[in-house]
Length: 328
Image (cartoon, rainbow, N blue to C red; front, side, top):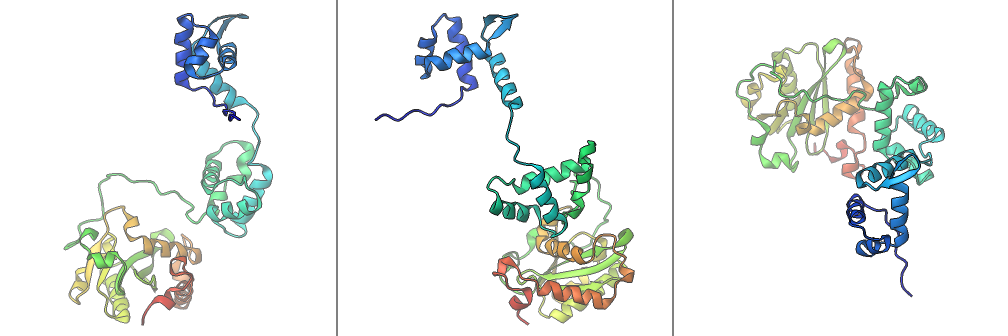
């Protein structure tokens, strides 16, 4: 028994061939044989998509036929999958349980096979933020419940106002063993700002274990910040390298070089080059959101957050915590 050939929509190149062959005077059956299509397929294509003058068909144009097909597909009735019930679940899980779009999509597909993807959820949330349609107003502020509530805009090749950092070595020169996270004592460091861009926290992280150290900052003066960072290094002991960004607070990095610690800098506007500490800062922001007034934050609160982060299970370590991985 021969298999029934599945129908496949005519393509734009096939429509172009139909136009040429019709112009040459070939019959529908002959055109169908040349294109390996049934005569009914060719007949239906010409009948539905030919150009007309009043009610009288005049000619077949591949370009016009393709446009008509696209218009029919665009305006034909479609099953609405992204309905109010699905939107309601997304809002509930996003606002009440603080789930990410990725987790929302995964949970939703456990209940409905046709649940939308996390990329669809992201696009919908951002589209609602800028929508001026009245019925979308109720969804306008959903983006505030995302972990990264503001999209980062690429700043391009603008002139940097960061000043020059003496003796700076780029991350490309960092020893390969530090890049591979094979040993303890290779750190990343950064600064978390608070309200009105005032200094908040100095954050240091061990690249291998992700163990994190936090220190509250009163000022961003480079001498003060480097004293705090040197104190963390002294507490850790046997620090080999530190990867920093191009903040002027780290301008006196060379003071650490005198103690045998090598310092390296990421390229401007390349936060992904120290992704581990950027991830930790994202967790820290869950406890100390942007615009936090760190003058009202106590050292005890900072230490509590440090302990919570270091006891937080990580999937990369099979859900062990940094404290369990770190060797004292």
